Image (cartoon, rainbow, N blue to C red; front, side, top):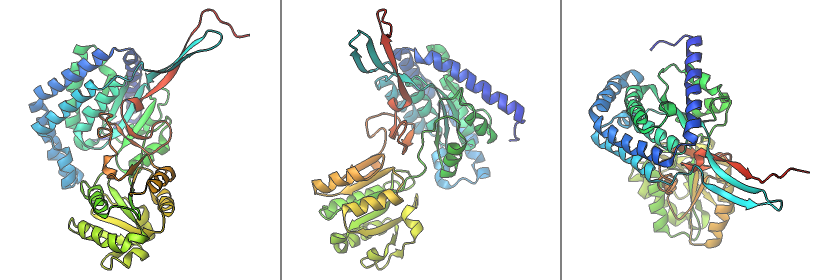
Length: 424
């Protein structure tokens, strides 16, 4: 697709953002019942439009070769009736979640009689940049509108026809349900320069959320003139403490690494206490080798894993997203925490231990968005946490951290009621 002339592209992006801003003001006061009706009717409309969506999806599948997509990427792109039914179910689930907008977070009366409330309100306009997965189009639209935000969707070019078909259904349903049509807009051009234009519109867009490869996220963080909710990568650790139940440890390590390797909350590094390394490491290696995982071991771990590949410095901070894992031996929970804080990505890290003091030390010292005790790193997920659909996971400390659901797409304002008070 040829690039769009710069002036025309700039106007298109500005007009899209202006429409979203106008819609956001209407959404802020929209009753929860209206939003929920839109979600449930959109779910039904998507099911009724299955044939049209599949036809659009086939156009994307047919063009996948042009983009050099891997077999796994094509599988993520592909839709079928079951996957469309799952997308519809996701919208219904969002409809059943409590509406965070208008929630009173705190309330108090001052000595002079002023009544002060801290009330939850939407962020406004969300610019969401994401990979070529059509289901994310509906998920993001649903979670943004439910939390009172307008959303500008910039999906991957590989899924453009599928996303257009889905957004068309959502927009048609919005007209019927009283939701502003510009509440959900899909960027209609695949010109990469459009992203730069949107990132400069801080007066119209309140937050940008990128979800994709590290290079994309770093570009967005560098160029954005508005706040960004993000995580760069997922170098997640499992630390096996001296007191760990070894069978539990092996099971958790296997699940954290092998249940799904190409995701941000998969384990990429194992740390084992020196006191149990001789017994524990061969057990872990045997289980991981059955799944074809290559172990890259530090010098101390190589004593117990003679068949492992010697690790390099780069391995300790690597996000493999595949069948490779690094392994190191440490002398204490404090040393494990120091290693994780230095090399990790502050995403998700776990300790396996029967010692409450070790568990408390680990959860206190490790500076990550989620810290697990005797559980797999794979549990760091919005739906698992009971947040419903998530728009991403943040490793930042402001404004949101961890899985970002409905509440993470809100902020707050103070409402002050007086009876004629003036400040002396």
